[in-house]
Image 1 (cartoon, rainbow, N blue to C red):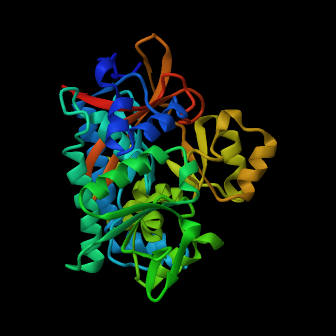
Image 2: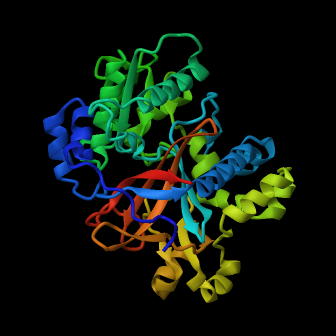
Length: 401
């Protein structure tokens, strides 16, 4: 078991469900939604040594410096979709860095754009003595992030309206978080709404929800390049610079395409890109070796599959990922024909919950402009994080010395 020892339980009279209900602005509806998602929030908190957290932050800082290099951007955008080359000057909110701990050493498993859970975990992170409906300081921190994105593209023009956009948002598992964000934006005087991407229109130079113009879109779509027909209005408005879209396709291409891990995990490629020696060493220690799956490497990867984890390069949410030791020949042929990377398998940490049940854990750092805003954990059983584990789900993290 890793250093995440038994953590203190939450106060029963100040439960995370109660906090979430009061924070979302619609306690009754939110309570119903949470009841339909019984494994969204864990019954436990998780601890992590401060040294391990500092190592995670060092990996994040090294990645951010690499991403800022023109040579890295040229390399990653060379084969990206055309829309990813459009640069409106923004950074992308809620870049998520996901780690496993191996003998106390953090290993960066992947990077995600539009990483979910930032607001839910802000609620969970509040100390028990804080007022139940108080989201400070995260509320101010997150709002400042969205305003910073707006200023990067729009300068001093006032921000009036924000749309939280997804496909059929009310049916999304993290819909309670959409309600939380809407409540925060509205408390700060913004016209905030939750919108199905297919209901957006682009006319008269403005992106609109019905007759309501939208200034900024908080993008929760997993169609990262906006290729689907139902996203045509959003795509056109984005390319015309008629809306601030965050995170956008460029952010996904620079950070979240799994193929980028083949650069970040190989010292000789990093040296070729002009990465500083200190950052090369940090990434070599903190990013598991990753290679593209190609027919030329097929025999080698199949023979070494038990030590590997296979992921689609543009995948998300643990969809179509496979542990090598569980592969069948049929699935292997699909991987060879698809767009996959093979990553050295780093098992997640394990811990016992308050009932003595064994759970796996991983850690997520929510990052903006290179700064870590929040760390959270996910507890689960099975091959991947799944929010289907009794007593599992998002868990707050307590840092120990």
